[in-house]
Length: 385
Image (cartoon, rainbow, N blue to C red):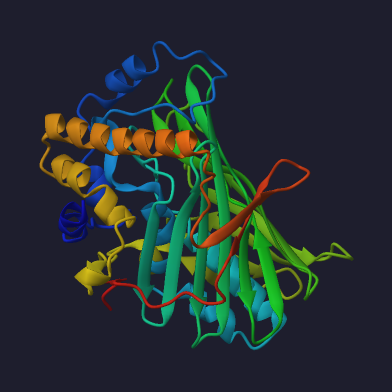
């Protein structure tokens, strides 16, 4: 058993991040994707919760959902996160937080999805002084927790994500429950924000779009932002821009608008001062999420057996090689191992407890996650500069 674990530790497959142009997802788009997706959902009833729905490897990008969440934080061209901690005024910092929140939005590809993380799976990566740790703290329902700290910039991130996908006949809508928190410790400011929904349209025109309202607020400064992700008008579902964003920054108490926000999250988003009429670039997607570097293993011995790149190594490599039989076999192996562990815990009447987070449910039936450690240590996987 020890030998097998050591061999597993030596196998880690890391793949390019989901970026603005082409890249991994585009390279692995399945052929005849619309026909395949239609056949996939043929026996699924409208309104069904797809949380337990198992995708064949042909529909997977070779990475875990934990890695996708992490990439939104550590894979970035222009460092919008550090800008948040360097703003001279609360308004400057708030605008930077809005830009950073938008930068975590990454392209979704119709017909492809990441692996569902197994219980206890982790993902640990460092970029410079920013250390990021994720853990799958619940499997049914799926809940992912993220903790990131940067001692140089004196900031902290705490996320709790609980995606709930549902099938509606001609579309799938995934609501991302849970809050994201960004703490700028030097200024005593705590920012809370939501996530947009992922809408996958099957008919009349296949697409995968981020939609819905996102609220960003800082009680310490009294500032708030409302963003709306939407698809612009099109002809019978064809054409139009599916990556539009519109919103505003305002005072929470007076509701007086300070800035208006408008643009496309995959292009340029502008910030307009409603008092002076001045317009400047708030966010440039080409600088932020194109030509992104792929993480590398710096310390092979330091990899945990729970690391996403280790857990899914065999399946990811098979998908990269387009060896679908081996991918199926690898995926079944992961699932059978999890079923065995679950059965053993049940027979021993043991309750599984996360290693790095505490988990609780609020009165509103939402999940909350809190890190057990004050800071995240440097990781064995790094993002090269």
